[in-house]
Length: 503
Image (tube, rainbow, N blue to C red; front, top):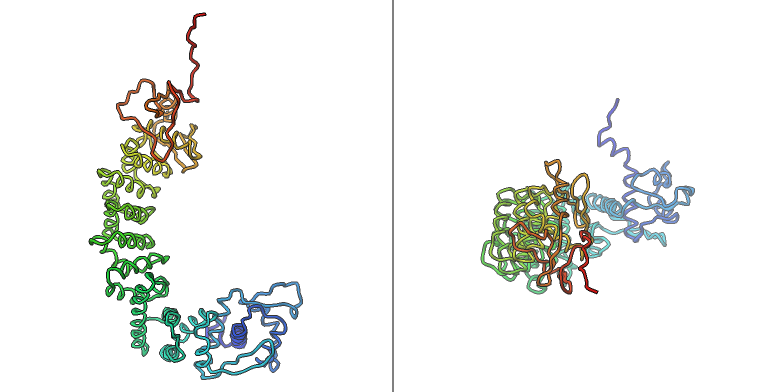
């Protein structure tokens, strides 16, 4: 069996490829994506298909990059379009590059009038380099020309007049095209360095003028440019750069390595928050040292910095045990705001070990209401809670659930598989004891009464056996108040004998 080589395949579909390229370029030149019958007639005539045995509609109907809007119509009456605009831009770029390399003019066909003119590739570039319709087109051109070792000529032509007098649009064009050119030893390396130096100046200029930088926020901004700018920038410019970089969906690790040491320096709260937001957007594993530096910010005196650290740590799957213990140790901090921040940072993880969950459960009896609320929310995020974790704090846990259920849709019920809480998160109370469910049911339901004191409702047996401070409603939840006297939970209320009245 004969296996076709790439060169053989390329030669066998040469006509179809050239037709696709000319079709795509002509469509872009006329701002046409849907090719009607009259468009195809004009293209067929200019492409001189009449001198071959090929029929345009037959070719278009068999090419996988094209689709028709209605296959039920006769081929002659159908309209055709590329399966995505990006394919049209790619094939159009191939036509431009082929003509550039062969030093041949571009055929610019007007589909409406059928008039065809010729334009040198350099002239076409001068005229359309800032046209937004050609943004992706020029990126493809840069990448295809780079493969042919002609990047130097192309970028020299971009740098020629006419130039954008304002400047930023020209820099964006340069930046977008540079992102498609491989960084390697070539004739282009010297010009590339010059272009990147210009871009560095523009980034710093934008930081000072606009107090933000859209240039560095774009994914195409070269990493080399960002690294050099960060080393040259003043403290104010660094803050602007950190803020702008935090708006990117991802940040190169080279930037992370340069930025993270600033977390340990004495800097402004604004910079800390910007750096932490930036680190939050790095989704790969971070070194332990950086994670510990983030954890250290949980103790920052500025609440905004603590919040940023929580979000930077929350949900990270790469927290090693050593770092996890460093974070958990801060639950003993004297500041309630720090303890709350630590629990919220840990609460974003659904795979916490039991020893950590036990420490969080202990905070159900914390003197700070925000800490207690953070603890219950963290526990509700866990897929399973063992009896070892909750047993010592089951009353506090149930009280917190009760009070939360008055303001959120939450329920907790006993079943053969255990005690299950849903709605705020799926929580299963599990354990090795065969009679666990019955034991917990008895603990919660047997002789349960509620005593009102100082306007706060408390659950538990009338004769409290555990010597623990009472659990109060978190500050964000309304206090449950009754006018006077003793109150019993409606579900557990038992009929009481009426006092004998003298008649």
